[in-house]
Length: 282
Ligand SMILES: *[C@@H]1O[C@H](CO)[C@@H](O)[C@H](O)[C@H]1NC(C)=O
Ligand SMILES: *[C@@H]1O[C@H](CO)[C@@H](O)[C@H](O)[C@H]1NC(C)=O
Image (cartoon, rainbow, N blue to C red; front, side, top):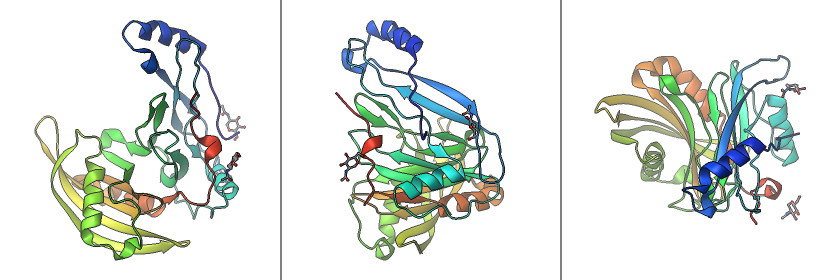
């Protein structure tokens, strides 16, 4: 089974009583997260802690809406099977110590669906978008958050679909990356600079690989030098970015991993039928 549908009655009732007091009916939702210690890759079995964030959209008075699939599909053979099911090319080689993930971004009514896949260090914690009655929020991200190493998917929708991304001016990539690093709103930064852009073709799709750097301004008033790499493409009515970054101090150590991550990035919107996996609303 590709995903499990879980329903937590306790959380349901707790959620109902907890939320009844202050929340309007449309916002009566609750969420819970589970951990599971299980992952199989081809040939060898490796165990790692994967965080399955299961958000259960629920309303108290009869309109039970929909249940979100569990965490992203992971494991080489599972991801390849899923890609095959969509008629898409399989994953390329997954580097040692890496795990692939595949997730649909845009299951909610406020977004358009994008099949996103990339590989990340096996110990990194994966986060996926959450859905409730109002739509979808959040993104696909993997990270070693304590160290500040992250890989984050971002949809830059301002320009719509961009034909022939490889021939676009540097400005497009600068804007896409600046929006990406500022995506949470609270991320303030300065001295952003794109240092390299290289287009590559992968099974008929074009991705532009970027190197960039910036200074993150922390809430405590410090400046942290950060370096990153990204892969940028345009599928459907937007520009999609997977960017991976760490502190400049760690970059010597993390660079190869960050490059492996963005090299493995693929996204698809056309010619695949994701309708069974989108959120259903009453
Ligand atoms: C762990 O993975 C194995 C092999 O895919 C599967 O048979 C088993 O049900 C899984 N266990 C859990 C708890 O998901
Ligand atoms: C997509 O799949 C669903 C269910 O499997 C089916 O009802 C629908 O007609 C399909 N859409 C297209 C455009 O093939």
